[in-house]
Image (cartoon, rainbow, N blue to C red; front, side, top):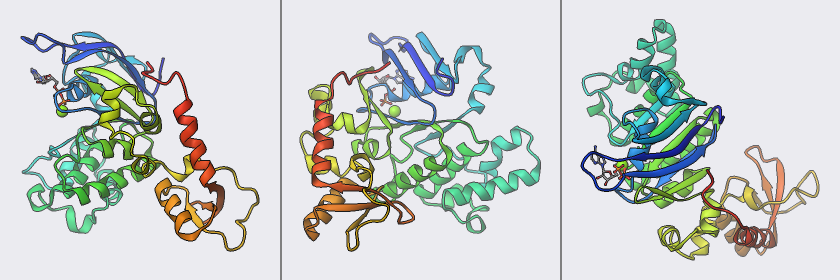
Amino acid sequence: MDVGGIRFENVSKWYPGSDRPAVNNVSLSVEEGQLVVLLGSSGCGKTTLLKMVNRLYEQSEGAIYVNGKDTRDVPVNELRRQIGYVIQQSGLFPHMTVEQNIAVVPEMLGWPKERIERRIDELLELVHLDPGLYRKRYPRQMSGGQQQRVGLARALAADPPFMLMDEPFGAIDAITRTKLQDELVSIQKKLHKTIMFVTHDVDEALRLADKIIIMKDGEVVQYDTPLAIIAQPKNDFVRNLIGGEDVIRQISLIAVEAAMKPPEGKDAPAGSRKIRRDDNLKAALSLMLRSGAEKLAVVDEEERHVGELSLAHIQELLRAERNMSGVGVNA
Ligand SMILES: Nc1ncnc2c1ncn2[C@@H]1O[C@H](COP(=O)(O)OP(=O)(O)O)[C@@H](O)[C@H]1O
Ligand SMILES: [Mg+2]
């Protein structure tokens, strides 16, 4: 069952002395290779749900399956070896250098020295920190954003298939945060981890997620793709959370790719306006309005012609999503 992913079955958590559960009867699956964001306001149970996955907390009821196995049947060290964990304050050991921090898990696993050395350089490059400059630094000699990069590198060190990230960019300034979000998306495109990412920031959720779990008072209110959550909020709580009916803001969060149609010919018609497929629909719309072009040629990273996009395609997509039925909490 759900091999490769994470599955919650009727999971609840009561803290001792509390009169209501912090997590209440949650059932859902996170599919292998997806980045799923847990979104909700402070105190709604996001951290509690996350910490039950790597058994930092134990559920009061229900079962959690990681890679098809009940987490209670797996020795806790073996479980955590498969699951990288990144938290807000990076969790780096302050008395260790960057390279020592990253080496912690590989050393525990008994990797040969050369392999560890190579891995440190590779990971620092992956998170865009120059190894020559940063390997010997201590956490206090780096900015918050740089520390979070090292925290991510450390969590990825032994290449675990799963990642739990609890508001990792929560304490970072807005500009650096956007940059880190973009980098996480591009890292995920390369590594295809199964990620649960906690945030209370709606834009962050919409930007990162393959799917979003919206939580309130310990319960899952909606579990859907960002597009479905925007176009089909399940109730007023979700509608208010994501900012109501602001269509322009909404289309700024949807990739061109989602609305485009296959190209008619191999090459774009001469003189046609081009847009990248990973650009967003707001950028596409503004290019149409600015240039007067009714149709744009969609290109990939290597400028290959991969699709066409017209105003009608954008309208069609939004209409289709609004009319879709039966979208809700899928277990
Ligand atoms: N260790 C704990 N002991 C008792 N209550 C806790 C503990 N951790 C969290 N809680 C309570 O459980 C609820 C959910 O908390 P949490 O999972 O931290 O929410 P979030 O991460 O969404 O802010 C809150 O009411 C919080 O006060
Ligand atoms: Mg929390």
